[in-house]
Structures are given as structure tokens and as C-alpha cells.
Length: 201
Ligand SMILES: *[C@@H]1O[C@H](CO)[C@@H](O)[C@H](O)[C@H]1NC(C)=O
Ligand SMILES: *[C@@H]1O[C@H](CO)[C@@H](O)[C@H](O)[C@H]1NC(C)=O
Ligand SMILES: *[C@@H]1O[C@H](CO)[C@@H](O)[C@H](O)[C@H]1NC(C)=O
Image 1: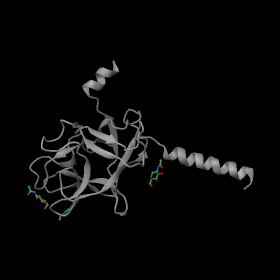
Image 2 (image 1 turned 60 degrees about the vertical axis):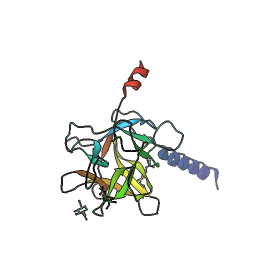
Image 3 (image 1 turned 180 degrees about the vertical axis):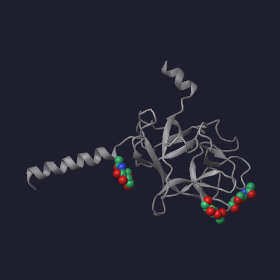
Image 4 (image 1 turned 135 degrees about the vertical axis):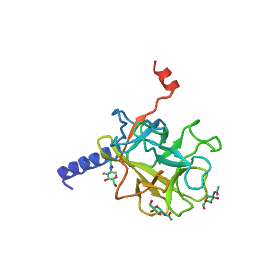
């Protein structure tokens, strides 16, 4: 290998590795903190509110992750956690979305995380832990443009990853499903707890 092509190789390797290390930005342009809590809102404001919980199908307590129909409703804060011991959440990396204490029904064991579950109608939707037959896999955050991202689910069984989109059930609940044709583009809005505010003073 000539020295010049060798240098070129390292330049490309450097560009490739720095692209991989891209960090997710929140709606204020700050790095998304690993383990921090965020509201997940649609990128286009007119397209409904944030992601929260609702009782759908045969559920007696709210266990399905749904998008609020109301623009002014931020939904619930969710903890975004990357298992790597790093400060900020990278794009394209395996993540978990966890419930925040006090924001889920008391019957739900914590930590409760998002998973894909086949509901009674055979459709797979995102619910918090507590169901039988969750599909094992990971979520990822992929940049669409600027601060707009889509959330991707990758099953461990080797099936291709799929983009999260919205599908309405017959009661009008906006359930999270795999929808590669029409992914939900989201932004992450930092949810500051009182203790976090105090510790900043
Ligand atoms: C993330 O993955 C997508 C799809 O595989 C790819 O198009 C994109 O370039 C990747 N981004 C980074 C920063 O690696
Ligand atoms: C709801 O439906 C699921 C899937 O058919 C079933 O496993 C579960 O036991 C049902 N729950 C209730 C409370 O009926
Ligand atoms: C699954 O969801 C689709 C889209 O919302 C709906 O048309 C279909 O009826 C659902 N399937 C069942 C078995 O309910």
C-alpha cells in the first residue's frame, strides 16, 4: 500500500467512526443524556401530542404505549437508557425506553420497559412490561434530519428492523406499530424533575 492510499484509508476510517459516534440531540439542541427522561413528541406539531399510555384492547389498566391525540399533551416522560457506560445516547445504538416511577399504574413492576407484544387481535404493538410473549429485541434512534428522529425496533431473531409508526384501533387509540412506509418522526423534549432543577442551582 502506498503511503498516500494508506493515509486516505485512515481518513475514511476516521470519518466512518466519527459518523457512528453521532449523539442524539434533544429539541433544545442538547445531547440526550443516557438515563435521562424525555417527552417524545411528533416532529410536526400538528400531528398530535406526545407518547403516553392508554388501556387498549382487553387491558384493565393503561399498558399500551400510545400517541396522544392532543397537540398540547406532552404524554409521559420516558427514560432513554443505553446499556453502554457512556454519558450520551448515540444514534443507531441499542437502547431501552423505560417507564418513570410514579408515571405508570401501581400494578406494573419497575423498571418497566417498552416491548413489542402480540395483542389479542394478532397485531403487534408497543406495550410496557407485564405481558406474555414479548418479542425480544432492541430499540434504536435513527436521525431523519436535524432534531427529527425515528425509533426503530430490531428483533433479536434476525428479522429486519422496522420503523415505529402509528396505527389507530377502532376506539381511536394511536398505537405504536411497525410501519416502514410511514414512520413517526419525533423530537425529544427534556423532562426536568424538581430534583434536577434544584441540583442545577
Ligand atoms: C444509521 O443507520 C442508518 C440505516 O442503517 C444509516 O442510513 C445511517 O447512516 C446510520 N447513521 C449513522 C450515524 O451511522
Ligand atoms: C387479553 O388477551 C390476551 C391475548 O389474547 C390474553 O393473553 C390475556 O389473558 C387477556 N387478558 C384479559 C384480562 O382478559
Ligand atoms: C391490525 O391493525 C390493522 C391496522 O390498524 C387493522 O386494520 C386490523 O384490523 C388489525 N387486525 C386485527 C386482527 O384486528
